[in-house]
Image 1 (spheres, rainbow, N blue to C red):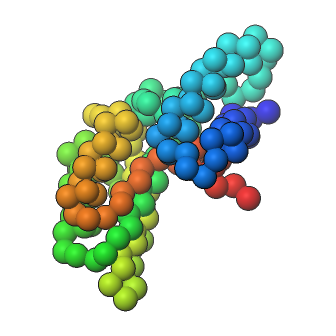
Image 2 (spheres, rainbow, N blue to C red):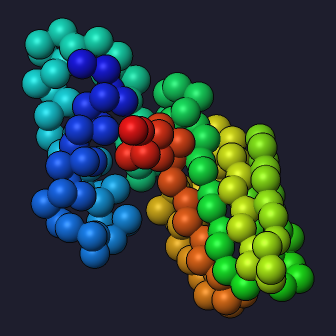
Length: 156
């Protein structure tokens, strides 16, 4: 079973166990902890694609392109400076914006961007905290997640 498929199954099981009130940070930590616990068994069994795994807490150790990118989503009431604030955090941590899409509909702001974190100076946990704090300051919700985990969690 490929890493992405395994991560998807673990993530789905954790969300089903915790229910709708599950905190995304807690789920990501649980999935990472579970994956770390079973990885040695998978290596011994000769599972493919496990050797270069990168965990949710640290994106600076190589891995696939999806493991080096983050999905950053921003939602809230529109106001000046939202894009600038998110971009500033990414620039300060040496992350590049790969793709960005934002819109305003009847005063409601929505943005999704993909950031390359292969040269990031901070861990994803640190970036998430910075985004959370900046979101509170701006009155918006900012979510950040590794692209491979995002894809696994949102696969149909």
